[in-house]
Image 1 (spheres, rainbow, N blue to C red):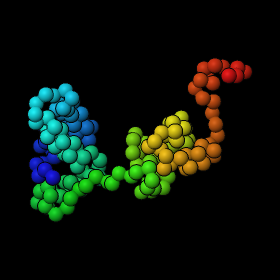
Image 2: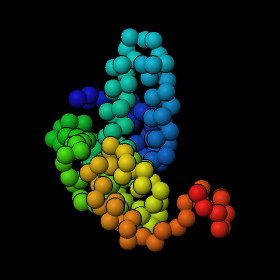
Image 3: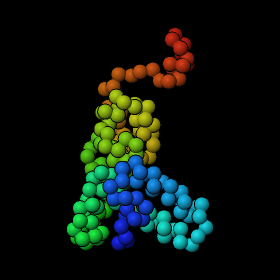
Image 4: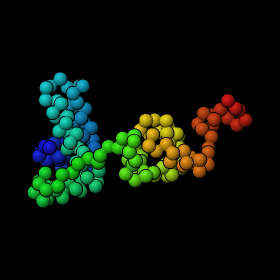
Length: 159
């Protein structure tokens, strides 16, 4: 793994706001992405950028990385590795809690109340296969509201 400082790679101050870090990553990713940059080193730079952002992308990971820096630099004694990706056959680390996407960390029950349309979509998508039973159970318990198309159609009109 790269021993360069993640903050240096991202061109941000170690005390930068998380939004600044995310914006810097997105800007640099667009700048160095191999699809838009013909330089031979763009693959290497993009991999380095992804690894650096992965170290500081969440508050927990950033705290671990900062503690690692205090102990003597990247890779000194603690390796901050990304969580293992779960396949469709494995269970989530915490049953009923999404571990990916924009609702990462949300429970299926909370999401059923907040965004049931997303859960309906997720139950049909390959990334939601392992949550399918929990999604169906949560949606069955949630009072149904008319869908957006039904609301636009108006009262008394059926399909």
